[in-house]
Image: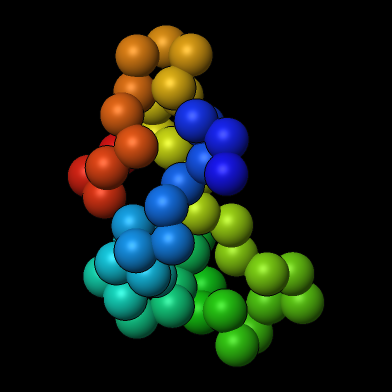
Length: 54
């Protein structure tokens, strides 16, 4: 795991928070042909933290 990787527990929390829906468009993972990706709102290189709120 690199320092910029998002920890598995944070990923699970983010996915659970919206019941498997995308944070942006709210489409459920079930209806998407692509896997949703957990990412930072504020990039790490811009000072964002790897926490559930980001």
